[in-house]
Length: 85
Image 1 (cartoon, rainbow, N blue to C red):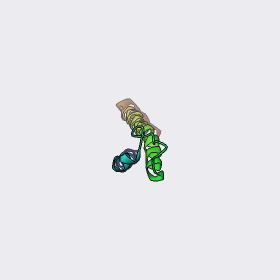
Image 2 (image 1 turned 120 degrees about the horizontal axis):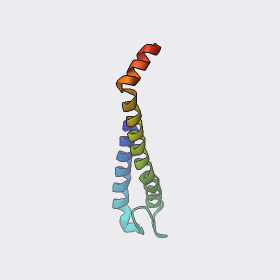
Image 3 (image 1 turned 135 degrees about the vertical axis):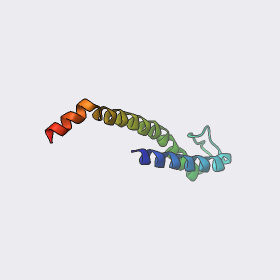
Image 4 (image 1 turned 90 degrees about the horizontal axis):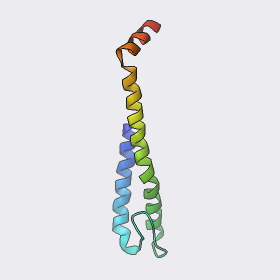
């Protein structure tokens, strides 16, 4: 999960650089193209808009899974796991 989150973050930075390079074509913001924006800029902004929601989702998932795995390593749970096997 951490690797996937890092990959998505890296891809978002690549898209951000592309949007920055094409910004003079016209945009309302980082993720909103103007009517005069090129197709390439509009596509990059659309992808960036989607990724801005995925990145916090991955972060939340890593936090939840970390808490779950931490709970599984409590001595009580380890003992139960050893007794079951």
